[in-house]
Length: 497
Image 1 (cartoon, rainbow, N blue to C red):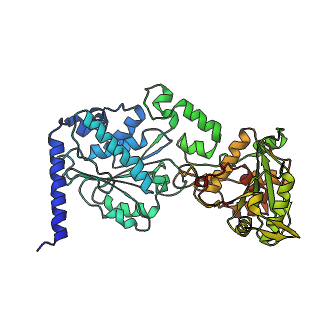
Image 2: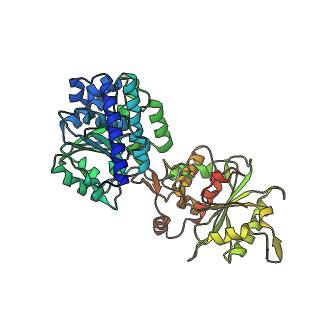
Image 3: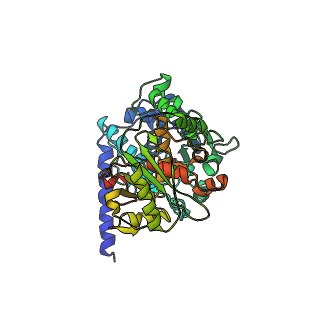
């Protein structure tokens, strides 16, 4: 005897089936040519302008069971993946009970990128008179034809890679977006589906020089490998004008911001795997030019305090006025209240008047938390003097391990601070002539993580290379960072008093 839950589920499935059947029988008929060729399907059903490299990708997916595409940004990557899903499930006779499974390393990539394209293409088809099954609002709800055919999306859980291998059927297509960020255990689980004839379409910015996606792009791979540079965009070559694809202005902006030979431009613009190219965050010339630059001492005072750990590290106070960082101040070591008192006394010498209340950003990842606690207290006595910190400075705790403001670009706040400082120097920022600071700023290297975000190497690696902690450069990064006073939402990891 059926329980209530089973009965409700049966009725829901019946309604979905009926709705899908009504949707697919009242619209225009899709031609046999479109069902046989994803390029024709994209043009006929969605009204898309299919450009040359996109045509190569779509037809490779038609002709080969395993296709791997490495690419730059803004080259129809997600649109092509969505077109393939709709096309693959379009022919109920040639590809009976076809299932297209979309996945990516994160839920955002599935829901906000590929699934958004699935929904957008459905809207385009409807405007042209084609009644495709209505996509669910969430990837997990999917697209259901009512006869076993479906498109469904989900996030890969690398802790349970066997979940992706649970899909079965005679006609399976796995579409893996940002495949460079997917671990080998998932691909090993997918190989079990190949025995039943599953097809695989991998597309990604090439962020990692190891793993299954990297292997799929090698000459002896069993995958049909393709490459699309952003330079191939029809908006740049003149082949066509297609809104949303890479433009010459965007390319030039990327080259100007990161450097033509940088890792970022290799991956995001040219669609090449990272190499030993320019991976320095700042570079020697940028730092030395900033140290030789003369600028006026205008603007408000902003301060950065890097509090020493153990083993001979320095407490460093960096002060900035406008576009100029002043000579760095070493603060004697001591207990938290002693360091706070010395930093406040140094601040008094830097202020233009007692009424000036500058921001003081403190690296509060470790021992700096104690100093921050003192600076947001109601007051303390130190060295025969009473301080009321909130009257002296606006203290802000900065935890560089927190998420970045721009989470799509940077892996964490630490990476964002480095590149914000680099932009500040390129815009005319001036630094004090400080040999140790010069060395520390030239030390950090960066790479891209599996989600294609900028990641600066850990401080431990820099410390091992320098033989000391980069206290001076860390203080400067804090002084240079932009935080608007009075808006706590601009800093997620700290609090103010």
